[in-house]
Amino acid sequence: MGLTFRKSFRILPGVRLNINRHSVSITTGGKKGPHFTHSSTGRRTTSMDLPGPFGWRRTRNTRGH
Image (cartoon, rainbow, N blue to C red; front, side, top):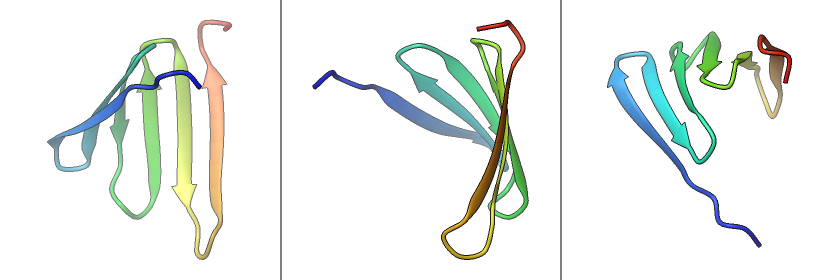
């Protein structure tokens, strides 16, 4: 099994800096409502928690990866 590294820092209310082995990303949004994530690899993700065990996510690659 490979090693993983992931760390998340709250830098402002509603803004998080996420660091992993391959990229750095910024996530904006509160606990309720949509979350927007912009990654250094060009990935943009919009997600939202829905009631119960459900969630919604849409991911777009802006660099053609």
